[in-house]
Image (cartoon, rainbow, N blue to C red):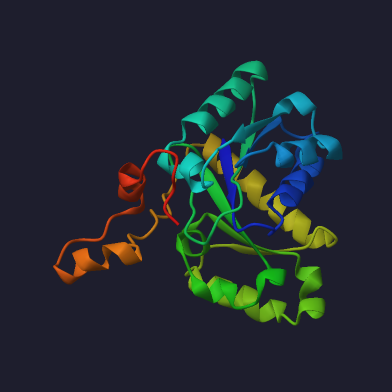
Length: 245
């Protein structure tokens, strides 16, 4: 099974993956693909943490906004995952970490079988109310770093409650790596999803593409009734070597 981990910059995705590896490496066969724009920083963090054989951690340098490599053109990540699967067969789980992105980023179901979206309390208690396909429809929402709530003025219970409301019953885990019960809840969810996948009961669900949007220089088009460009169309129309803001 391939498990995608997405979320904004600094929410603790790499730390979450390190926690999972520590807890699961003796129970299942694991590998990790990390994504950074220009470096292999997240891969080096995980290797230095000693959570897996370093060869089981492969970096992808996207060279562009993180969502391009997890949704728009997943080739680099697919090749990295397939290389790991060939080198360490049989693997039970490949975790693919997105580079930090905004609330619209989700994985293509062509790349992952399940995905979780990570927020953290230090990003503000209101962020969960801002919505987006990852928050609303990823297989799991993780509200991370709950131990920081008292220090950043966030009502963690309210943030988690509003996350559950936004997800219409889909699961939410309130996580702190210092809280054993919450770590076990995350581990149980991963193992349960893996068991369902093995039994043929898990269906990859696409949380949905990023919403169409347009830039200021396209307002003239809208004034004349033209449809906004989708994000993919913006990439196609952008000059080589540039990226829409």
